[in-house]
Length: 171
Image (cartoon, rainbow, N blue to C red; front, side, top):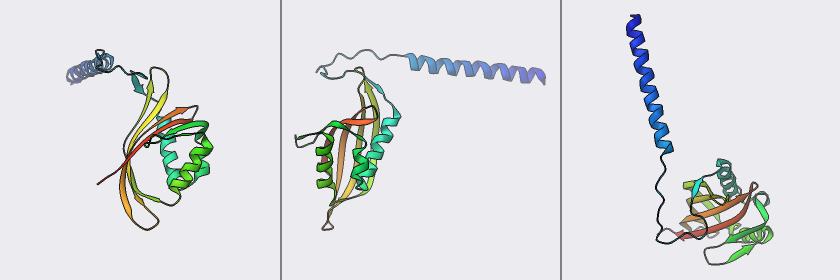
């Protein structure tokens, strides 16, 4: 019985070592560099960033939906930029909060869901959170429309310093 147990233990150990070796090989494999057709002008290489930044952005959405603009302001740097999908750039926390109060106070967000949310860090050290999300927006007259967004938030020192947003109605 001892020999059977010893053989089983030895075989299990060998298998475990082999599995660990395979994991290491896979993790250490590097992808061949890509010869881009169009050379990126900002950042070429991304890695997964700080998951705390995901929570910052999720909380930012939560307080906006609650119309708690004061708390939202605590998450934005004083010199933040907001690039809107219409081409407008809003500069500074005060102007961004004014825009949000004006545009979000009269509507309700329903059935909000995130399709994907990725914290990334570029080879230049910039921390971003990229979000694909959707919700139903209900206007004061009771009409509703589903929308989808693709947003990118740049984070520095725990604050949003740059926000790029694109939105489209779902037909």
